[in-house]
Length: 184
Image 1 (spheres, rainbow, N blue to C red):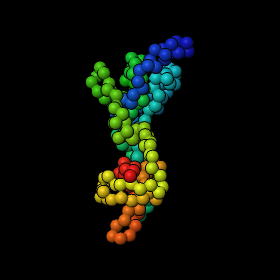
Image 2: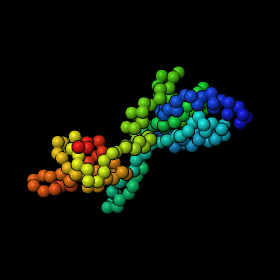
Image 3: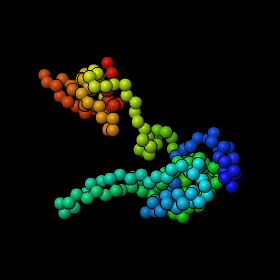
């Protein structure tokens, strides 16, 4: 069996691995994720169905004066799957309990574009920067557009700079995203 899987895998390696969106019954997103993961493991399809996500975000709620962190689904009723689309992977996903279908025409699921994947925050894409503390930069967007300042701090995690901008005769620290400045 593993020889057969190896042959099958080498046939499909040239295809792109893409993110697909699957529609589920409302409230079944996590169950669908677990069920697909089990079927992938049972059938040895880890090389074809690579990742399954139910995107969530944490929201802070205040009830009766107490902070409570609640995790909510970003896209209720949908599950995102990173996979190589084959007849077999389509069959596994489509016939999972709780799945109503792929997003796209019924016969041909449409993968997400790279821009959609980035904008949805499905995969973390780090932005490369060639600026460092002490560099002089020009603000190219936002309320401080056209101001010139000096980078005081770089936050790689948040992808922001703390820039000292001269306003009203004094240096004022301003937090700006990497995309809001250009090097001089």
